[in-house]
Length: 112
Length: 116
Image (tube, rainbow over all chains, first blue to last red; front, side, top):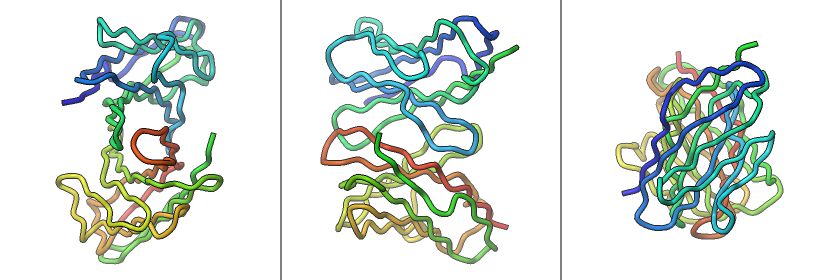
């Protein structure tokens, strides 16, 4: 069965510091992996996605993620946090079918 | 990216009434649309998957008679919450994708339903 685990329901960083949001997955077939961001009372916005090819994926707003098959991980990073990055982040997995499985989410707090 | 709209963005209704939420793909034809429910500070829970012109496929535990889904065209899907109760209060999000199998999903902005 496929699953997505996000380590840490809350992450707090200072403005300008590195952002690291962790995501591990379980899949019996090669996965498609996604990171979404959600601001309060809004839908989800795609930050980046990995389907095939290069394992380091760059997304919007300076975020990037690296697909590591050996570690079954797809952690999201950003070198320097900005106040506007404060939001809820969801890691998600799709195995080529209709259903996308979401992680529980990680709320990112950015301190001034 | 493609744009998906939802209407209304917020709705407050009395217990026992029915509420319809619309999901539209504005600039592409959506073969498949998804309806999610999100509880406060929780992840998205898939309620059902709908394909244009056919009956929706509901996830286990979702009452199909309570949450009626209609995907009448390639750009419109509706979710009707029938005989709403306070416990139906939630944030409902739709998404849409082109084609069959895997394709990127585009999410609507969500609808906040409050049942008094």
